[in-house]
Length: 152
Image (cartoon, rainbow, N blue to C red; front, top):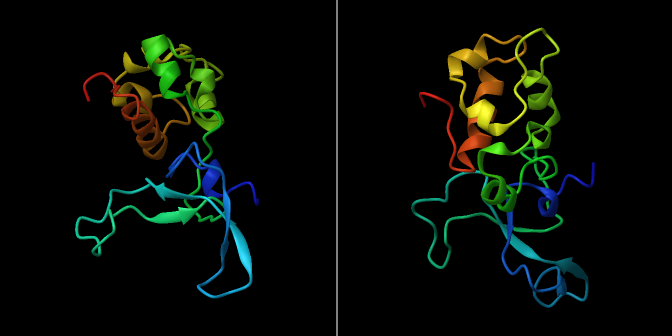
């Protein structure tokens, strides 16, 4: 479970990706130090009225964690999306989504993102094991690559 921390979350953005983690006092004047590497949580939109000196995104240490954690493993990278366009293999999507899109239930298989974006939300809802939550997650993944389902 300790692997479910900010540095491994799809929503965490390293503030200084080329800089190593550093040791810092736990609080000013303390002799106790912790390893720190800060970044931003991009899970939700920034605060539209942040405190002075703050950009609105939560600033977190790489070793922090929360209940909203999602793996970066299994999602196509932005580079994959640019290089492969709409032919990104569905196998790179999260396991649950990949299974829901497979032909295990006798439906036509969807193997690429190109085939996926050719479907409408209603088409996907007709498939066994694709509900509104899965559809919402699929749309969120596609939007992150500037793609949409047919009719969206």
